Figure 1 (cartoon, rainbow over the protein chains, first blue to last red):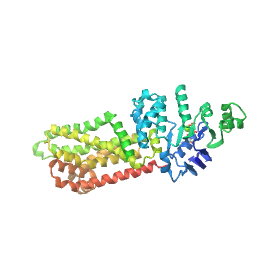
Figure 2 (cartoon, chains in turn yellow, orange):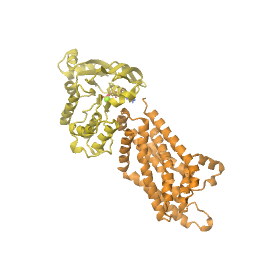
Figure 3 (cartoon, rainbow over the protein chains, first blue to last red):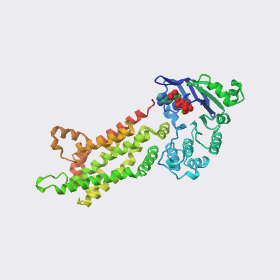
Figure 4 (cartoon, rainbow over the protein chains, first blue to last red):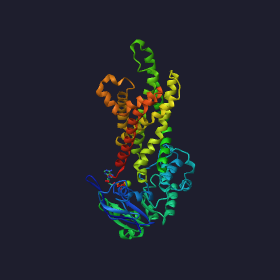
Length: 238
Length: 248
Ligand SMILES: Nc1ncnc2c1ncn2[C@@H]1O[C@H](COP(=O)(O)OP(=O)(O)OP(=O)(O)O)[C@@H](O)[C@H]1O
Ligand SMILES: [Mg+2]
């Protein structure tokens, strides 16, 4: 089964067409990276697929349910780590995780597991607002993972993380492969190349190309992923 | 239910970890009580002005003080609405009812605490202690709900800045004028009086005064009006929040 299937999915904000008749298919258990320059429409796509924005046009099926009519059936199964860090500032790290675990009715043991896996142990009792940006980021990601989702949206998860934390997060993401469908956006191309089963490059709200990192390289006729990205995404950029 | 409860727990923590506003809600009614008692003691006996007598003043101020809970609720919600934390919760399975009840529940004990402090101060100022005061606290619960619902509606519709102005200044003034806790509603004429008694505030003050007096028979007639408003406004808050949360 496909985890995501969109048909001409479109979002317009007044005159701006943020996502333009997008046809995107993501298989179950796949790690799919959505790449594209600033303003390409990645976040808008994620917001539509996670039920935060109503599509202007088109349709989508998410985990076998219709996005427009069956959202309540989809919501318990998905989790989002938004582009902007999203934590409750006055709660501690542990309390933040417990809150989300409670809302999704997930196994309370997962709270400890997330603390261990994302290296949050030493910060566990700190209030979120006292954490550094990178630590808040880790917490924000842990909060997306704690509900054990079937479908996970990670919007620029590694933004602001130090090199070690980023590698640790890569491992966590790798370990989800096959079990969880992950849609990832990132501006770190080596990250997309290393982690993704498939990659899609967006520009001006349209999907320019999808394929495995290998296929992307071949299509662009280069061995350098960044170069390939520039050729594919930059083509018509302003 | 579990979702509401988890979210309520978070909001309770958010409230008690912001001690300044909690302190404000507790201290302000006490200050008013003291000031007005001093004024009362300076009013000549022959003026026959009994509005500020402690047995009328204490229940009046306690109901008035509860309007700060509206401000509190509104600030809590409007601040959350502007955060990306809220976006995360919008992607979760939480419903409008989960949100509204989750905000409202922890504000109820806060209101009770405020009343306890208010009555403790009133006792120090000469209000005789009796079991009636506990009845009064219970009688104040519906008006608490009214205030919480109004606050949550404001917090849903307005941003943080507007909330401070509207709930802070306007609502407290409206309660002051319409509740009859500052002056007798008869002074403003029959039409105004009737109007005030359609709204919950004056009814709540009367019910609280009746409770303090021990005239229990007078309570139900007033309290059902307040309770109807409480139920109606809470339902309205859920509807408005759900609508606002809907996809744009
Ligand atoms: N709420 C909004 N109102 C109006 N325009 C919007 C809104 N959200 C996004 N846009 C516009 O939609 C387009 C796509 O934005 P989006 O946030 O999806 O880009 P992105 O690919 O996530 O970019 P970035 O890499 O910078 O995060 C942009 O032109 C943006 O200005
Ligand atoms: Mg983005």
